[in-house]
Length: 294
Ligand code: FES
Image 1: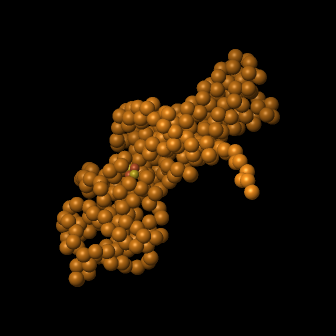
Image 2: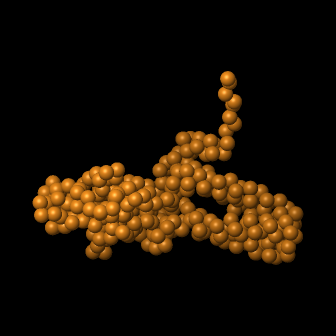
Image 3: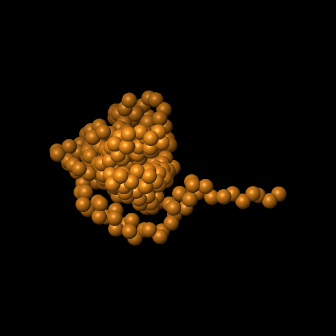
């Protein structure tokens, strides 16, 4: 029997977008520009959402979209035009910090994610342009033109939102990539390796069942973290050991997330979630034992 021809749905188109190389040049240039202009530390960490422990961009997005959807509803029920104008203006005002946070996250993603993110950004820019035009027309007393542009803007924002969802859920761009680690280790203590087999002051990887661990011997002690960076699963054991404000940290080799070795917490993004840490003890025969810190 002949198989029915399946039409490409939105998810297929977004999947194709991931693989399309046509926009790679501007993507590379823009990502580099953003990384240079918003350097590591203070502002960059805030825009990533490090102080909140989760990305800042998604909650800001709900403010922008919420204002514009509400404005469209007010148009529908023929509410006071001043209320509609206020909501459109509030959406435009919140679009700037929303875009700044999104752009900062985007600059530290894999290329496939950046391709989808780039189109997401362009479509949302179009939405900003359409809502700006709508506001100007409404202020000039041309209500019906303003309503038409609002509808077009909402359509663009819907496409932008769909691509944002693809980026967040299908491509897991803002998810914690280390969350599952502790659940893959059975309760209790587990033998890991012998302390004499570890180099001094240089992290190495060791396997424990299904997972890989970052193991650092320092002085008489051992620090064990999940090896998987919570940002995009980079291998932490290949990272640099540094002192940040006198606190020993490991810097992920992929995008520079910095985790404190004492408790796995995030010192610098783009990661916002901590590195899962393991409790350790050394048996008399020199065997290191670990268990997830709960
Ligand atoms: S994977 Fe991106 S900073 Fe570690």
